[in-house]
Each structure stands twice: as C-alpha cells, then as structure tokens.
Amino acid sequence: MTLAINILLWLVVGVLAFIAAMRGRVLLDDGVRAGVMEFVLLLPRIGIGVIGSGFVAEALPNEWIAPWLGPESGFFGVVLATLGGALTPGGPVVGFSIGAAALKSGAGAPQVIAYSTAWALYAIHRLVIWEVPMMPARVVWLRAMVSLPLPFMAAALAMLLGRP
Amino acid sequence: MKPPPPRRRRRAFDWSTATIAALAIAAAVTVYVRDGRNHFLEILGGDLSLFAAMLPKVLAGCLIGAFVTLLLPRELVARWVGHESGFAGLLIAAFFGFLLPGGPITIYPVAGAFLIMGADAGAVVAFIVSWTLIGYTRALVWELPFFGADFVIWRIAAAVPLPIIAGLLARIAVRAGFEYRSDEK
Image (cartoon, rainbow over all chains, first blue to last red; front, side, top):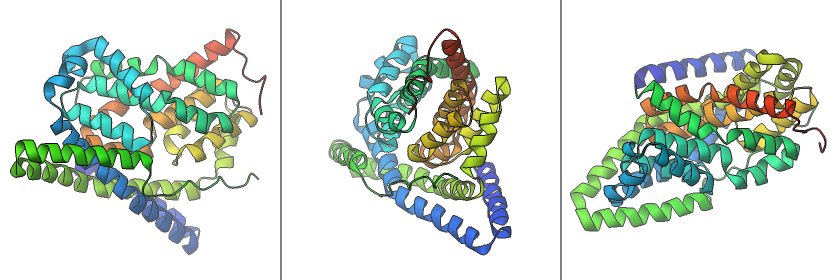
C-alpha cells in the first residue's frame, strides 16, 4: 500500500517536473527549490509533533481517554471530540499532535475524525485572522454556519465505510 | 492581472510548535522515569521509523504543491469556477479545493476572487471546505506522518461528499433569504 502511494506520488512529481522543464529550465529550478525549501522548514515541526504525540499518548493513562472518547463512547464521544476540536487553538502541529495522541491512547477513530474535522473547519481564531480580512464577512459566516454539521457527518460516514 | 499572492510566512519554529515541544519533553520524561529506559527507546524508535517512512511522501507533497503553484495560474482557476453554475459549479469548485496547494494566505484570496468572477456562495463554500478537508497538500504533508496512510485514506474517503453537502446547504440558506452580497468589501 505505502509503496504504491510512493510510486504514484513520485510519478505525479515526475510529470509535473517534466511539464515545468518543457516551459523552461528556470521554472523547473524554481519548483524544485520552493518544494525542497518548504520540506526543510516543515521537518522540525512535523518531527516534534509526531514524536511528541507518541510520548504524550504513552504518558496518558489509557483509562483517562477511553471512557470519554473510546470506540464505545459513541455519539457522546463524537460531540465531545467536536467541541474539543472547535476549542483547540494554534496551527496544524497542535491539532494533528492532539488527534494522533488521542488515537494512540485509546480514542475511537470516528471520534478522532470528528475532532480533526471540527478543528480544521471551526477554529475561531483562523476565521478571524485569515478568512474575514480576505473575503466578504457574510460569506465567512455562511461558510461557518453550514460547516456546523460536517464533523458529525464525517464521523457517521467513517463509521458507515468501516475501517479498511 | 492581480498581483501574485503574498508569500506565506516561512518559519521552521513558532509558538504552536514550542507548546507541543514542551508537552513532548514533559511526556518523554514521564515515560522515561515511570517505565524505564528500554520502554522509552522502544517508543522513540517506533515513532522515528514511522516518521522516516513518511518523509518521501512529505517531500513529494511539497514538490507537487510547488509545481502546481507555478503551473496553474490562480486567475485562470478563478475564471473557470466563476463561469460555472449549478451542480457542476459545486463539483468544479470542490475539485479545485482539492487541487490548489498552499496555506490560508493563498487560498482565501482565491476564494474571494471566485465571488468577483461571478461564482455563487455555494461554490465558494464548497471550495473552502474541500481545501480544508480533502486538499492533498495538508493530507500528505501533515496528516500522513501523524496518522499513517490507512487512517488518512479512510478519513478522506469519508470526507469526499462533505464539500458538496456544504455547498448545497449554503445555497439553501441563500435561497431561504441569507443575504451575503450586501457588505462586500
């Protein structure tokens, strides 16, 4: 599975690099430089988050998480996770670290999906800092309003599909 | 022609990361003291190998994002989405939400441009929700190293209908009287 994904991704990289090279050497160099730069700058944050979430999951006693957010917590767990996602401040490293730590220490997968969906869609500070200055305010509120049911739908659809 | 979108702030470290780093150190010390050195090394090794296994995909994600940014002019995307309406408009908006790389500082101006080019609020909502939930750059670069491929594929499969649902809900709200063009900046 993971090998197939790698091959597919690098095929896409190859095709895009080829198209860029056809349009000129400068474009190819720019693309490679921008991509590698992004990768190098992201590495420390992702590394700290991934390794940190592993230790946080291990340090937390399992019986703290499972009753609230475990697979048996059902709809109540989904509601709790959605609230938690809405209230989580900070950038992606925070949201993904907390979600991964919860999953490793016994939270149910649909609950974690509800958490990360709510975190990605609701986060109030992101709405205020990014969306409102760049778009008509009422479109932002409309977007936020229709997003309210989405974490529940994401969790329900994930349960329907079942884990691969 | 619009000026190119402003560059994203590029820093390897920030307050979010600092908070998580502090938590990580506290948790690592707890595990070391409570469970001993061997268990500590076992967890560190497991997480490091997961992280290392994901690095080629993260790099591929960064490169794809960089090339798509260079090869696909945002003005063109805005024009395509602006000219489509109906259900096809939602589908196309959701597709570009999946396709366009970049962070909030590059995405929201594009969404604003959709409105100016004539797209309706439903298409804009579908675009933003799609970028947030099924955009490949966030999935490849952030989610994969944290959750592994099986989980991420499953989560995204469950999220595919959501941008369309959100766009339809937005159209229903507009039809029911939600006014969104009144205070355009």
